[in-house]
Length: 511
Image (cartoon, rainbow, N blue to C red; front, side, top):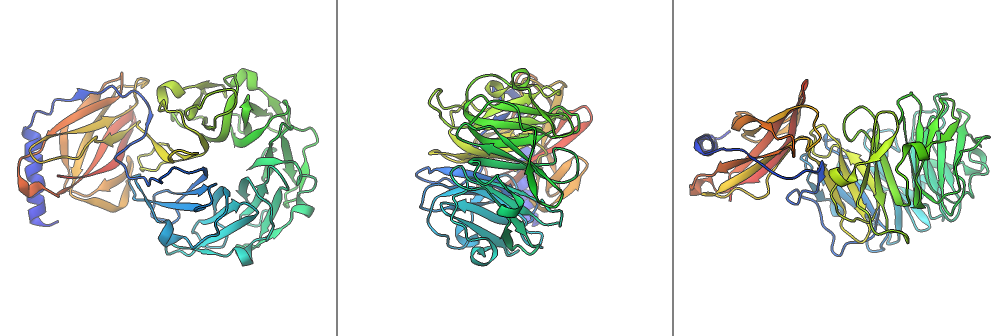
């Protein structure tokens, strides 16, 4: 580091140490919040985003996003993560020119033999396969690598159905035929629907999801059927040939938009959540042999929903799977926020939306869950329909600031932890480093993202249990030489008695 820069940072730190760093509690009680000062591309006017997928497409350690749009102006938007949970739109430089038509669903997959995630998108009457070139760009190989069907597909499921080590694809259509494409290992797909997916082509399925429901080490497939039909499970013979489950799935006829799977009751097998539009969502519990019981009444909040998307993840870090639900306005209820269903550990869910999620009505068809800011907790990306796309950041260990520091003024730095429901006393501190650390260094406490020397900003302090947030006031010296100096900060907090964690990296420039 340059001596002059060290000197300037030292001036800032002396001022911080001499200032009145009385910590102030804040009233911000929700686990997830949108951060307005974290970079995220805005599209104006907001369009009809129909899908979102997450993967680290450039292998830099930070999860990136791709959105697809139902409007016919542009079909795909690729957003690159800056490593701290902010995103830049790299569509123009990373993606090839694409045909202008409606896009329904998008997925990352490793189609060919390399390690870089590729992109598959379904459109009106066509699909596109974009192979990652390993240099941050994608190439359209649709004409040579995928079947040229004219089916408009609404769902994509990716998995190795025939056990040959590559990713195959099931595509669903709410109006016409479902399809099964087998991969030759080089990213060239063959349509095997007639031979390997018999009698399932005309189900009218909105979505499909792979899971090994019977414990025989191959992938079976759930079909989420629309237009008020019974839902479907097909069993894999181990070679990628599917047959109808002879017993079938219990429950009423529904109009399903999403099937999310996972072991919700902790018994070692895969259960299934069926997200239904303008109906009651359903929860099917597996007996371990692929036989399912409809335990909706005993395990889910009851009532009509507008479910279009759902994903399972351990949102509250208690060792079980919770469910995040994306809702769309339906004829019987107003627009709902993203819904959070927390698992009590036994597979019974309760609605925790009111005290954990932003109270913002949001039409959304799809969500994706990942640790976008690399602080070891789950954040939520959502696809907005006629509203902005965005990310809700998990604040169970978060460093933020509501404004930029200015010379001669007091700057506020917020340290967040579990708000209102922490089981243990929490404490934390903020560190100032000399620069961003790229690549990050893995430690037992998480990923270190700032370079030494490090300075403590204020004392290590107990965070209030009521809201989990403390503000550190920092008096920035009235020295013009400090203007345009970059500050790189990272928090540390004890998440639980034996779980000390590094928080996200926060960047500021003194104004």
